[in-house]
Length: 86
Image (cartoon, rainbow, N blue to C red; front, side, top):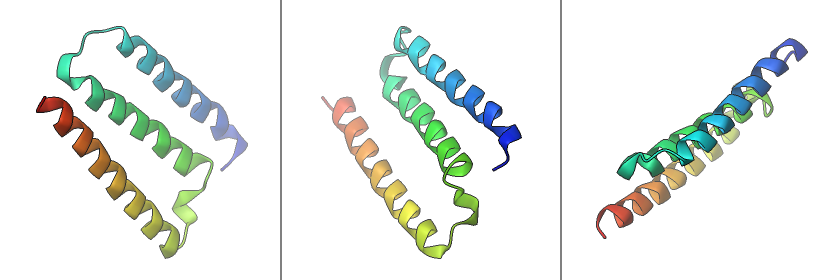
């Protein structure tokens, strides 16, 4: 990553953090967890690409990230299902 992109990454992460804070004070109903997970996934993706240089990773790293993403989605689906069925 070049140093010229770091301010853009910082701006994106700060903007998403401010968005998270502002949406915490808005009544989004049942979509609140989904919106929070989406914003968190966007921030995690930015960190993966910008700082961990994920684009240059080998197949083992891609597999590890895919498995981790699958389990995170599984946990999120379980949490959302639990909340919806209460």
